[in-house]
Structures are given as C-alpha cells and as structure tokens.
Image 1: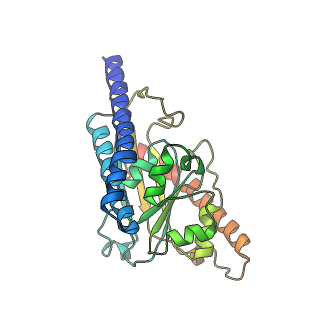
Image 2: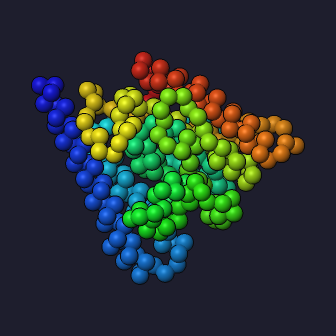
Image 3: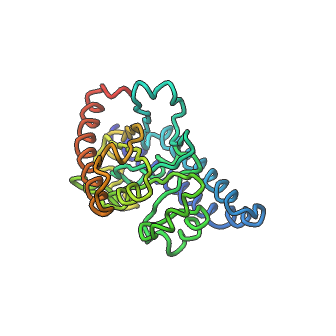
Length: 277
C-alpha cells in the first residue's frame, strides 16, 4: 500500500512539473507578447506580468497541496509591538521604502513558494545563467536583476520603492550555510533594511538536486517558512565609520551566524510540533 502511495505521489509530482513547464511556456511567449502589445507603459506592464506569475505560482502551490506533492506553512514572526500594525501576511513594506528580503535555499521550489507571499513590487535577483536562452525573455519582462548586475542597475530597479528578494547562498543549500556578500553589500551601500526569511523542509533531500528528480519521499514534504521583522543595518553592524567593503563583510558574517543558529531551532521546533504554524 505504501509503495502504491509513493508511485501515485511521484506521478502527481510529474504532473505538477508538467503544469509548471506548460505555464512557463504560455507566459513566456504568447501571454507576454500580447500584454506587450496591449500595455505600452513599461512599469505597468511589468507589474501586471509579475501579478500573473504570482497567480500561476499560487495555483502550483495549491495543486501541490491537494495532490499531496508538498504542503506549505507560512507565518510572520513579529515583535509584540509590531504585531498590531502588521496584519498582511504577504511580503510588503508599509513604509513605502524598499527592503531586502533574504532566505536560505534548501530546495528547487523555494522561489515558487516565496513568490506567492510577495507583493508585485518585490523584485528578484536571479542567476545570470537564467538570463540567457528561453528564460531571458521572462526575466527581462519581469524586470528582474541578476547576480552580475552592477550596483547602479540594482539601485535603478529599486527606484520606485521596490523591494528585492535574494538567496544569498547563490544556489540550493548543501551542508553548512555560507552566504555570498551580495545581499550584505547591497543593504550596506543602499541603506536598506533586511527582512530574514527562514525555510525548513521536513524532507531534507527533497528537490535538492536535479530538476527531474520526481521520486516522492516516504512522507509528504512540509515547508515551514518564517518571515521575521525588518532589521536595520545599523542594528547588526553598529560601527558606521567602517569602509563599505568591511561593513558588508561584518554584516554578512552576522547574517550567516543568524541563519546557522535559527535553522536548527526551526527544525527542532517543527519536528517536535511546537513551531506554532
């Protein structure tokens, strides 16, 4: 019976991947092309396209849930003084000032899940390799930046008060968390608050390797995601007279330490059923 359940969930995973791929093709060619003809304003077109992507990802997450491919549990973790003022569960800034959202990256679907909890004004930093080939059309239309974009390019993309989502590890997590300095450098130089997001997957090896790994694990994977309150750079690195490069390095170390401590805590709380989701 258990073997039959595994086969069925593997087929369900293949189905979800197929729907995702078909959606990418439809959004990447005819839909984007038609919207480019109908909506002439670049900014408005970009936001509409991001909204379409968000809606399609929400459907993927919903489909994955009802087909027992994976389940998602998301919550905001705010200070008591902030909880009354923060009622929206999506990632947005009420102050109108952009923020940098950072997250660990354990699986292939982290981006898909997180995007369902973002506002359309949240930009995303993607790998440069995604800006070549078929995906470049989607990336360009969405106005996303990549990990080789200059500081000026990133700053320009955030000029409308947009926020930025970054996976500081650069790729999916394997072993100890090790951040590249991109997020810390941007936050330090652009003076943007950092919002840490912590992801724990109940099945550690789930979708951590190749895209075509559709074999379902023994148990349905559960994603537990916590979004914490914004943190000012000055709260993490009080010394304001440091050179920018040194300040970014100190900030990066602070963030690495925070994630190396928090992820095991989140894992333990979820495994023991006391995480509060």
